[in-house]
Length: 310
Image (cartoon, rainbow, N blue to C red; front, side, top):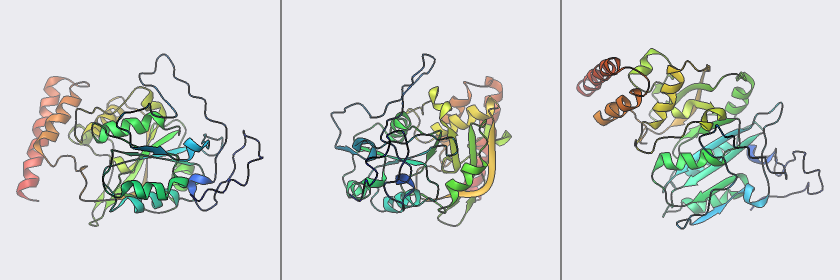
């Protein structure tokens, strides 16, 4: 534990610094945020996940009475990492978050009950992680939903356990560029192989997910009405992006690389034919059957074309 609370006598309503070197320890408060769940909200926000018989462990700054708040000049950015047996890459992921120059960052890690050295890594950095829990879950989207429930930031950013933020300046950059009225702020990503993914939200989103999860900062307001559908293995984030596209929700693009992503993860949407049928199911909630069949047909043509000419 490397916390040194040298400001214990400071007013509880004022933010203070626990450690100067970490983005997650420069702007904390003793007073917890007020959790407001409105009647129209479909999902409940909490400070701590409910007790679970499968829980292995729980910890972080929040369990020690240190909390984060959005401030007038510093919107809180909540980073959510879900992991299961990720000891090979997780430390790099953590360091890319806590090493940000931006001051108001909340880091949440949801572990699926790892059996390797993942918990050892999490405990090593516990003093720079706001909240973490290790327990069984129903898959990656169930874990993401848990992270959403406890996130207190104005902006939510999902970072895979084998991915990392590309530079220490990214959060500072996006915090100064984000307009308050947008619901999605996004950039691009680079794969570990060197290939680029140029994110976009537009007509092509009708066929496949064109906005990479690890390039996207979502306004927390969206999650008062949305949770990832655990029925889908890897396409539930497509549903959120398609909702934003279909409903013409305000968004903003920055031409910057946000994260470096592993080529070995499960997030290569469109790699199997089942992905297209799952996207078909998602679009059926938003568009006519005839138009949806057309988009499915075109998508499958492109799928087989890539298989023939990779």
